[in-house]
Length: 108
Image 1 (cartoon, rainbow, N blue to C red):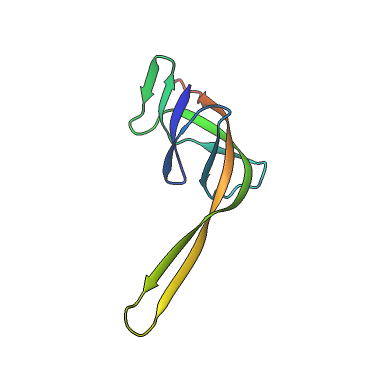
Image 2 (cartoon, rainbow, N blue to C red):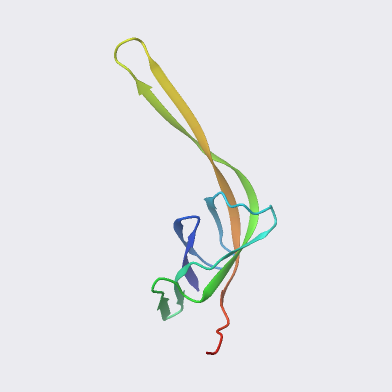
């Protein structure tokens, strides 16, 4: 079983017990984050596609947060001996998928 979810503006293919790296989430370390933007679920031969979402939820466990790889921007100006070098590091969150489960319907 796997699902296609939207986390922090990006789409990820997730399966139970999978570890992945996402954009920074505002959750304390060891906490849980529930994703309700589930767009597709595949369970064996059964495929469900949402228009735009499905009534599923994915529970993530936050493992750690730390900066990712360094990005560098370098500009050279041909006259005047001017050069500009800028660097940055995006904050990343490492999570583990705990479960993919269907939400209970209201019955109405």
